[in-house]
Length: 175
Image (cartoon, rainbow, N blue to C red; front, side, top):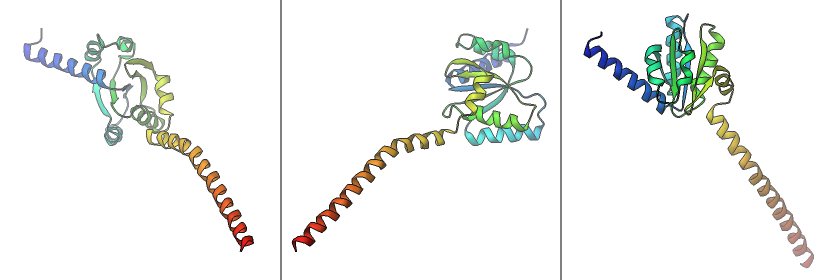
């Protein structure tokens, strides 16, 4: 039986992991077996630049953490070396970074994950990763909203220009 200090430390780890998983909007579980230290450092730097939390987790601790937070369906993927990438603000960043990194590094295997409290499989994560970044989506949406307004302004501007031309012709004839 572990001593009280070790047991308290493990309970705190499980509690912190459960809180992290519960508060994250997205989490991606990955098998990192075969990555070199340099590759792992590169991956961590990419995560850090995007504000994504990334850590290696123990499967036993993860099994205890997912109980009671609605993520029990993740249990089958908790085997072998496992790491967890979580995101709070950008739903696409963890999936996109891992998917892009996996293209160049066959050692990375996306096991599955969760999205806003729902368990999803690796295929959903891969489809999510194929979406453009948040900034691009916002720019496209604003562009599509701006197009009708720009069209209206152009039509009104053309009508006003034509009206001014006609009024100028009438004035010239009257003079």
